[in-house]
View 1 (cartoon, rainbow, N blue to C red):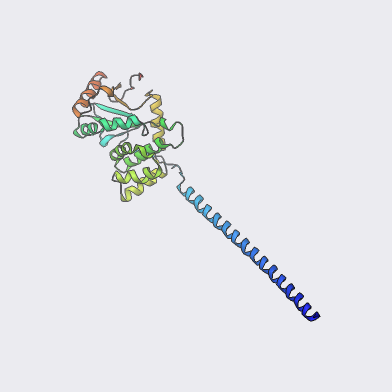
View 2 (cartoon, rainbow, N blue to C red):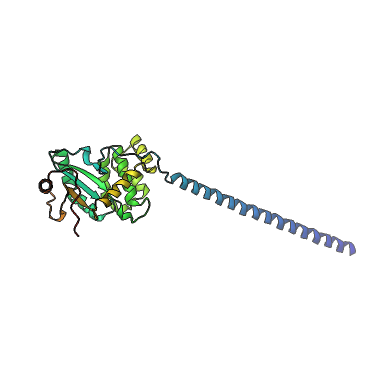
Length: 267
């Protein structure tokens, strides 16, 4: 009986030792599991941070001026420069401005036709007041993208599509890929466009345009100005002949000048 008792004690002791070893092993495995999970979390976080850094805007030291730009920081429609023998239309707008989108929908086709026919010239100047002081906001980024589109020869198409798709919120996806592709920017031009957009290569140009908007006392958009005379868009016939008549009248009343400060805006 004593031998059996000793055997039982040894068996119980061995069983207890085995249980203790299993417990230690399980703890080690759990610790390894938690460590692995932590490592995975760190790796994932690192990837996210790396991607964020990769997408983070690094402002280009060499700031560019878009082709077909004017001294007033506008961009010429169809690349046609003003001449002394025809009216020159200056369009002030903010890409987030709903009234600007409405004006583009109402008058844009007629303006494009008149410019193509050589009846007038026109330039678009961009304000960013609707960003409400937000750095690199939607208005600002869209203006930068529009200038980049001018650089690769598709300003007019991009400008039109930006207003037709104003409700997208102008995310980076929209501005860097969706709109330029829809505007016909492809291949090497699309790569170039993305580089210019990512580096904000036209930041200074947009900044100067926005500053001129304030300096000229425009106060609100859309503002259609000819020889310093601001058109009353509510009374302008949107058909090509009607719009030409309004532009010509303002041009003659203003002394047929190309660049002139507008009359004070009256609310």
